[in-house]
Amino acid sequence: MTAATDRRPGLFVTFEGGDGVGKTTQATLLERWLTDAGRTVVRTREPGGTEVGVLIRDIVLHHRGEVSPRAEALLYAADRAHHIETVVRPALDRGDIVIQDRYLDSSVAYQGAGRVLGRDEVRQLSLWATAGLLPDLTVLLDLDPAAARARLDADDKPFDRLEAEKESFHARVRDEFLVLAAAEPDRFLVLDASSAPDVLAALVRERVKTLLG
Ligand code: TMP
Image (cartoon, rainbow, N blue to C red; front, side, top):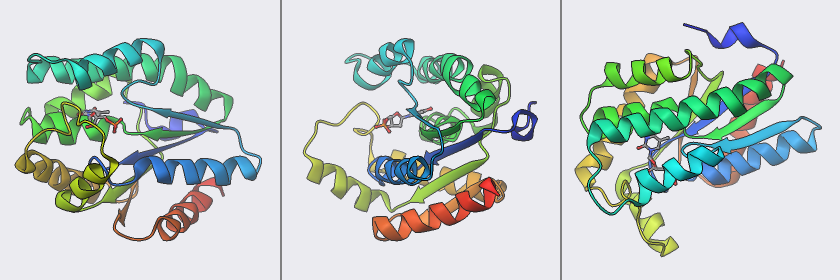
């Protein structure tokens, strides 16, 4: 497996957590801080960080009929394989900082635990898809799913296929993210997403500073 350290000098930062926890806000604040400091940042997301990925995103989030759990896992993995090869690795090789909404931990939490496909199989699928690329830092924004749901309700947008899942699904997703973070404490920064956005942003900056040296 290719460890993150095999491909310096870029930095790969991912934001993870349930729906409605504030990942996009934090990714935007970090991007702004880094670009103001003169760094080159590639801001991207999964699913949907490439042209092919946008098509896959539409299937996994908005297809009206059934998508079997294994097919769903493979679609996310296909999006990821193409995205990492054509966008993320080239950026890291150039020495850029990649800030990404969601990565393989989302697959382990949503497909592995939410859809009950199993942690190890889903993780191995993503590692195969990406030739083993792991982030240097993963910020997990942890929030009680009921509080996250209230934020989504306030947004007043229609729910996608995953957001529309039951409370028990989102509880499994949250628990799995916490298990993953506990297993890799060096890679993860776990933050209480009920804190104010500027407080969270300062904590993220502090950790990123230590990685930039
Ligand atoms: P988002 O871009 O608004 O976060 O929506 C993406 C949805 O897709 C979200 O509900 C989480 C879900 N998802 C998975 O189930 N597996 C994955 O691997 C990824 C990246 C996202």
